[in-house]
Length: 77
Image (cartoon, rainbow, N blue to C red; front, side, top):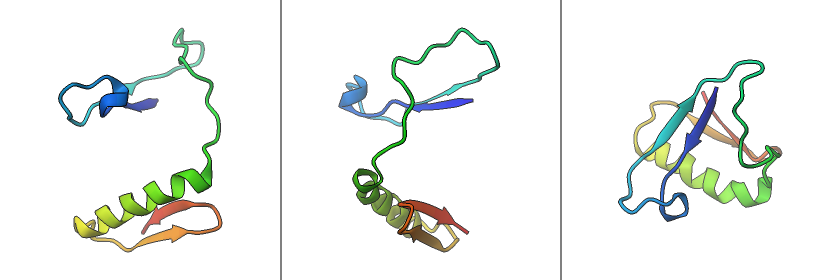
C-alpha cells in the first residue's frame, strides 16, 4: 500500500486541507510512480521530524516520544 500526502501549494492545493491518497498495491500492478523511490536526507528531514514529534506531544499523544539521533528517526512508545 502507498500513502500519498498531497497538502499545500506544492501539491497544487488552492484551499489548504489534509489530503491523503490510500493506494492499494499488489504484485504486478500497473501503477508507475512519477518518481524513483530513494532514501531521504536524514539531516534535511530531522528539523521537520522534531517539529512533528513536538506537535504530537503538545496534542497529548499520550505516549513518550523519543528522537533517535543516530538514525534521525522517531519512535513513539
